[in-house]
Length: 343
Ligand code: 13P
Image 1: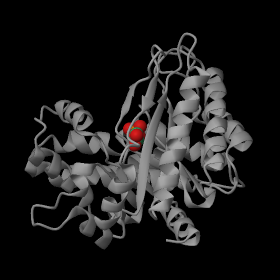
Image 2: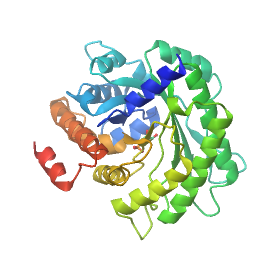
Image 3: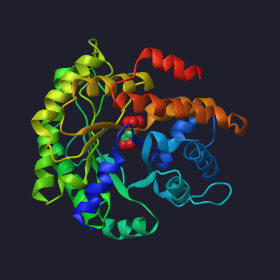
């Protein structure tokens, strides 16, 4: 695949009014999510839940791509249609999480590095054969007493760039995800400083390793106070702080920034994305979403593991997708939220 093809795929993923559904929870993570609705995590319950998401009518209206987990990429609907095919028929591209998770970083208490580069070239070839069009790798950076260290940021940036280069070599668009976690009591300024340093280091590594910026997407955190910080920020403050950092360190050649929700509530994530788009009419990048929890939380709850609640679960997902689609054009508001939820 040529660099131009990669760039076209990346742009398609951030097409007007659309964003990405992150449904790539690893087996331990989806187990935790299913536990919140008292459903045991089995091959079949995981499959049934993902089928609910992917067969939502009209999913392709506001969802350009879905990130899958290895197991899910190989699964099919109850009727035997592979999920990848089913999504393609709905106009939705399939992507795949390829990292092996964040593990403790040696000699760096409280910090993590994401593993999974060994054998990645071979796995990517297989994912292409299975129909994947894009990939994702998540690094986590924790803010705490004396951390993050420069070492933690550098090793994660290096791995993200290795992953991105291998993905592009295989003809897959990499979604580069350096997540500065919301955990902690730090304020918005601390998040801004760490996010700026992290993104600066990530783009230096991407440049060093010859990654084509036009053929990738960035999946970052918003600049936001820690969950336990006494001074929370309204959407306008989050948008201003985020854009200030991004204008400094995210090259204009990157076609899109697809934010993670990272523990924000569904409505918060929509309101913040809306404020970002309202403030950034002239930004060089598309500002979109790649939400996991902020697209799925109410759908999971409405379903509750009961086949009879399928339609309610799908309606909840459709509603959130519509709200985030509206946030992309800065036309989300509380009235729309209430009207669409009631519809
Ligand atoms: P959240 O939106 O729930 O943070 O998930 C996005 C994601 O893919 C994390 O890797």
